[in-house]
Length: 276
Image (cartoon, rainbow, N blue to C red; front, top):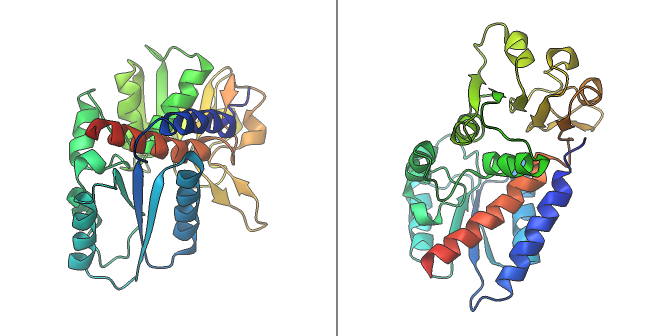
């Protein structure tokens, strides 16, 4: 069965909209975009539109690509002290002359709606998370919809980034799954994948995971989104070669992507409620 992330995200946004309509003040999200990277600009615009749709207060802050580290940190500090702002997001990647880790660490952890601050990652590690990274948290919501009991399941995560792979593995561990995390140095990757009851792939390589690597009846979550030369969007998994042999699979587009933004809104509402 296809896991319809677009529909699940829509239902989550409706719940958030209903909740916001009862509040005295609108939750506020500030998104900082540095430079003019086209893909980042699209992501920021989508986040801004999603905020307006659910009734949030939204600030879209554009900064030039040559901004200094001190100037960017000063902007983050301003937002940390702005009572209208409950969530702060700095769109990544940043230009190479900026220290991304220092910028992320400068965000007040209680406003870190991306869930990347070391304090929030540490709490996730301890299974007492508050603000969790949006994409892995969104994936867990999708898995809940399937009704799968993750306890004891063999779960394989392909990709070890700080944004998706690593926190995804921790989310699955916190659900009592048995987790294998694979990276670019993993040997015999196909053998690891063949053992997976649940497979989560986030590597950014189109159709890298072949259908004959995946066992019958598995659940496949494809986080990757890649644009081919013909303009078509595809995932990291060969969808057509996989869909007829698995129990559940996310499409690309329309799977994990919509959940990431819906989860960002959910985190912002949580940050607001934590303040009052």
